[in-house]
Length: 418
Image 1 (tube, rainbow, N blue to C red):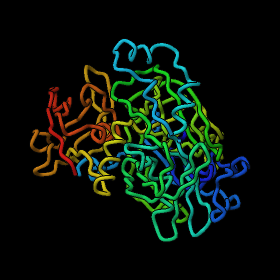
Image 2: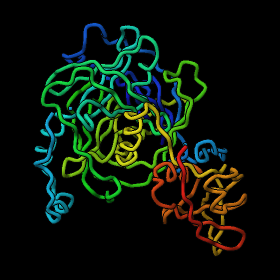
Image 3: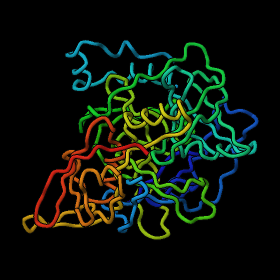
Image 4: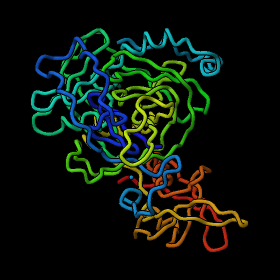
């Protein structure tokens, strides 16, 4: 099984959570007429020859090779929907238990969801999704959706559900978390931000809806449930010289897994809960891969991933404020490892080195320590630990379960920002 990032012109990354310009599943995307609102200055380009994009690894049993990733861990469309929410605790809780009114939620939430058109030198180079955030003058999306427009000749336009099309500029991008923020040049009247929920309160089995622009089919919604939480996913660029994005950083996400159908073009759109609050930013999905040279199975297979909204908004707020983002770090170099407890083997993140003066050093972590849990969540690989660190705030310590020699101990670490 492999995973794909979803973004431009129905052509997203393949080969294990990938960014790039390869058609989803390795086959040319369905020929869909461009949205009526597509600007004449950016006509769709002819289908391009598939080419390999970078891949995601170390997820769903696809373990990454033991690699030192210390640099990442140590230093990895418009009306609000207030009517759907309430201060009454019992009513609020029932919204997550009873069957949601998806018709009402989609009608209201879709007004704050946008289709994103990315142009390069006057040509349409990508399509994606996003949603209105905060004061209504900003849009959150994925970094990989707008990366093509970051350089000279780049252009971004957003299309609202009523057909209004406005220009936008990139406020900031963060490849490490795959989050980007756009500023809307001329905000249409009555545009309001999407209500923000709490991804930290999500439960497996909870109903959710994904909204976006898959394959250029704007105003599309799909429903499902939260399939898993704290799913570590990692993406990185390969050495393909034709790869679209020039970002070389590895993206780490402690993702929300969902079976709501996510397809190419959904990237950057919201995942909302049964009360219409955004709880995640759709970013990637899994695909079947029959082997080397295989195009894989196209379309959603019911395994999609979203960046938790708590992490996404933390990054977005920094981008809006300063244009860049900092991340929590531990201060260790780690590799994949295994340990045995009572004769039973399990995965771990083994400490190769500790950076002097880092949070890890101050907490007493040592070379040779094997980290097997963080705040009670199992750690079975270096990517797993990186994802947990990246999603953790600095307002409270992170409790690590560490095996050192024949003993198991708890180490409390106060993470820092870098």
